[in-house]
Length: 343
Image (cartoon, rainbow, N blue to C red):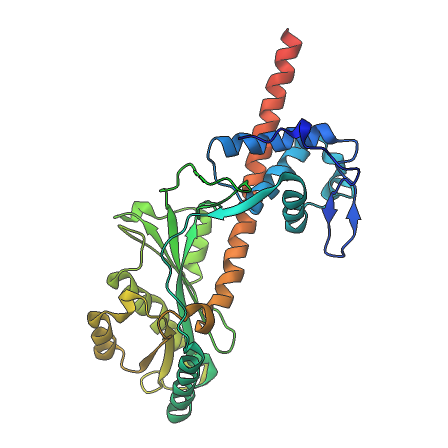
């Protein structure tokens, strides 16, 4: 299954880095043995059915070069800049891998989604005009799953044409749920983070967690880590309602009279009769506007916010993992050197 790199037939054109400026530099030239060594490391991951994507490969390569020849890296004074563009081009040009995913039944975008979107916008416009709702009180929320390992979405690079895509830990779906919210003015609300567990011990208690809590974030837990009726009510009571009240005060509005609009999608918990009745009984001033079913990719405003949010998670993971991998390889290198000296 592994690539026979010695028979791969290297061309004279050794690609290094594709920077944002479009400039191409030669990095692997005169360092073919390092490229072979690194790709063999990736082959070992592939043979072990470990899933990895361009983010994983990016931090693996940076950590590898930090140990083997860090002087070529841009951050060390060299000219080589490792970015996603380089990694994707290198994988495409040199390895012959394709990005694969296990297929699952998916919802289909309605053919009338544009008409449904126009109707949704018309409803929103009517509510804003009829009740004098400012942009600050037009709020959009969406839950998103954040996988603790970015490559854990059943996507992984494999040889083109290979039919079986086995990924170690395929059934492992460890993640947290984050409720991300913003208003039509572009202001972000504090978020809710749901961890898996039945007690408060499931939540982190580090300094970063305390800092988030002090900023108004709600760190909580549920047995399945998914948003439940209880967690949704907790979000409304601890985050949404206090934020609306403080915003009304800031705008000089009466929070006991001022209406607001809350845009959410047709998630099953949002549609439950118990939740809708609870909202009407306890918070009648919050008007719920639903994004039409199966149109989230087109009509859910939070999708734009979530893309940036998930990219930031991937970048932070890559930086952390790079440090861990670099430290691991450094320890291994020292042990090997020590072994040779003893010998």
